[in-house]
Image 1 (tube, helix red, strand yellow):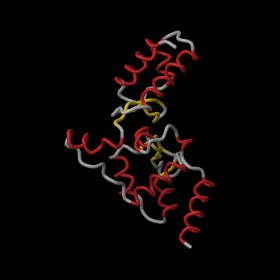
Image 2 (cartoon, helix red, strand yellow):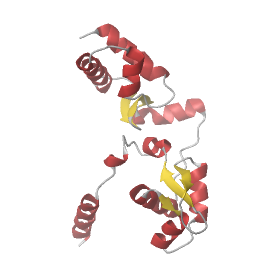
Image 3 (cartoon, rainbow, N blue to C red):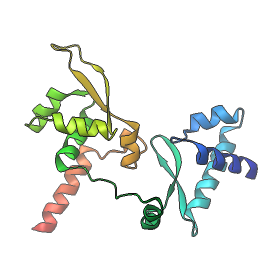
Image 4 (tube, one colour):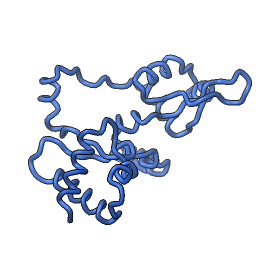
Amino acid sequence: MNDQLKAILEVLIFISQEPLTRERMKEVLGEVPDEELEAALNSLLSDYASGGRGIQVVQSGGGYLFTTKPEHDQWVRRLLQIEKKTKLSSAALETLSIIAYHQPITQAEISAIRGVDSTYCLKSLLQKKLIKIVGRKKAPGNPLVYRTSERFLQYFGLNSLDDLPKEEEIAKILEEEKQAIS
């Protein structure tokens, strides 16, 4: 295994402003064989997963990035004087989950599913950059169409939308909770 390649990957992930994808790694590295890239990347991930390091490499948003380990959060926030991440309201979470599972979707469709006006939630989610406007639907009034953003994936620690739980998984979890309460 090439230690030099592992060091280069480490530096590329470190300086990348967004999750570094394998495709981008290949573009930057040129003609490095896929097997060699995989071996170096797996070795780097293994190094950071083991031992008492304060940072980790995580797969999120379709690529890799460095993050601090959650157990060190209070000290990082104290140093940077960061307030705790604002929690999303239940209405915002409901709206966001509708968008995630039904995208692309319009405000009218979201409001119809929720049964209430979703204007405020959409504005809030847009401000937090968890959703984005991706165009207009060819329908009367040409309404805006919404999708989740890359920030959504990062915020929830997802690599892609395929990582969202499936309907069957959700139903199973809800049934288990129902049985536990009984």
